[in-house]
Every structure is written in C-alpha cells, then in structure tokens.
Amino acid sequence: GDSVTQMEGPVTLSEEAFLTINCTYTATGYPSLFWYVQYPGEGLQLLLKATKADDKGSNKGFEATYRKETTSFHLEKGSVQVSDSAVYFCALSDYGVKLIFGQGTTLQVKP
Amino acid sequence: DVKVTQSSRYLVKRTGEKVFLECVQDMDHENMFWYRQDPGLGLRLIYFSYDVKMKEKGDIPEGYSVSREKKERFSLILESASTNQTSMYLCASSPGQGPEKLFFGSGTQLSVL
Image (tube, rainbow over all chains, first blue to last red; front, side):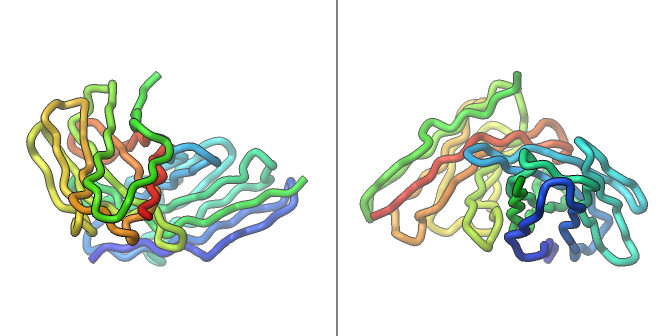
C-alpha cells in the first residue's frame, strides 16, 4: 500500500541554519504531496503542498519540490528561527479524501 | 475563523470503560476523520466519514467505532477501553472530493489506566 517515510528526529539546529527534512513516498498512482506542521499544544496545520511532478510548494520561507524520479518531497528552509520549532509531517493523497502521514520529524531550533 | 473543536483536551479512563470522543466542525465540511498520534508512528487513520451516516474504516479500526448523525459532529467510540488505546486522538475535517486541506482540532490526550 501507499506509504510515507521521513527522516528520524529530533533535528536540532542553531538559529539561521539551513534546514532539510527528508521525505520519500511509495504510491501506485500520482499522489498529491503535503507538509503539515504541529506547533506545541496545537493540532496540525497545512504548511505547503504540491499536486504534480516538478511542482514546488512554498510558504513562510519553507519550500519542497515534488520529485517523481526519486519519489521525494524534501522540506527546506534557508534560515530557521526559534519559532520554527515544531513537529513536521509529510503526507500523501493518492485517490479519495484521506491522507497518509509519515512518522513526523521534531525540529528544535536553539537561539 | 474556521474551527474544529474536540470536547476534551485531557481524558483519563479505566480499562473496560466505554469512551466517547466528540468532534464538532463549523465549516460545513463533508469529510471528517479520526486519527491517533503516537511517537515514532506518526498519524494513523482510524475511521473517516464523507457524509452524514456514512463511514469508512481507516488503517487501524479495531476496537473503535464512529457515529455521524449530523454533518458537523463526528464521534469516536472506544467500546471497551484498553491500555494500548492510550494515545493522542486528532479529529480533522475537509471539504469536497479531495484532501486539498485538512483542518485539525487540537487533540485529546487519552490515558487508559
């Protein structure tokens, strides 16, 4: 079945460092891909999405490019802030209304 | 502002109890979902519903049931709570035919003793 694999965390960075969180997927069709973020004590919220190959999703300085050839959707940010500390989830949707999530990656940014 | 509201933030129950987790959305969304979140396992789909009185099993439905009598309300029921159901439960909703955007509640942390 369809699945999403994320890099293990926690990822600990200093403020202004470059961030990459790896995400790869397995799907039989042509899925839409998503990144969700969960701040402490809150529910998940959509960060960005891409619906077809080579699309780039972007929001709040974060970017991810849909790479069909490598089945990847890695999340990047050029300069992280303490306020970016959260849990990040990669997800896919193949057909239908449901999302399949990865394990989540905790990001800690230190001042 | 759009809202998905879960009735309790923290809940403590005893093994064998029947437990109800309630979720209400105010966005007139067709689709509603229940996930559980566990460290290292991410979010796993328990049940979802795409219309009133309609439900579909997700990936881990065993030990759970659901009820959707009204469009805005989706209840998760643990028929006989067990310790392995201790978890964070997240409710979500989305409009229309595809998961363009899920809106999540802030979660219910359930402890079964």
